[in-house]
Image (tube, rainbow, N blue to C red; front, side, top):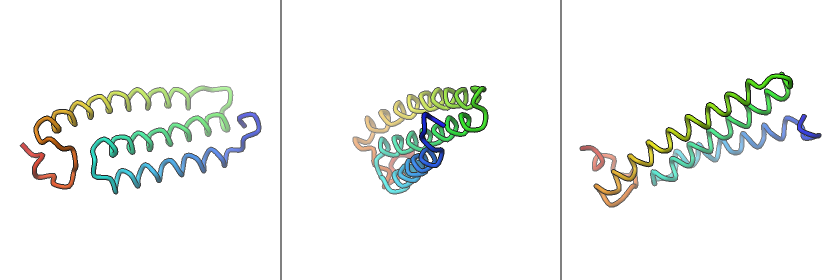
Length: 105
C-alpha cells in the first residue's frame, strides 16, 4: 500500500487515536483539552479516508479531498470554539466544565 506498510497498521493507528480522543472528550474537564480530543478524533477519521482511498481507488483522490474538507471544517470549528472559550474564561476566570450552570447567561 504505502511503500510496504499494510492497511492494518493504519487502521490500528486510527483506532488508537480515535479511542484516545473519545477518552479525552469524556473524561477531561477542561474545554481546551476537550477541543484537542475532538481534533484527535477528526484526524483519526482522516487517516481512514486516506488509507481506504489508497487501497480501494489508488488512481482517484476522493479520500484526499474529503480529508482536506474535514481539515477545513475542523479549523473553522476550532477558531469558533476558541473564541467562545476565551469569552467564557473572561467572564468566569475558569474554563472547567464541572459546573455547567455557571456558564449559562
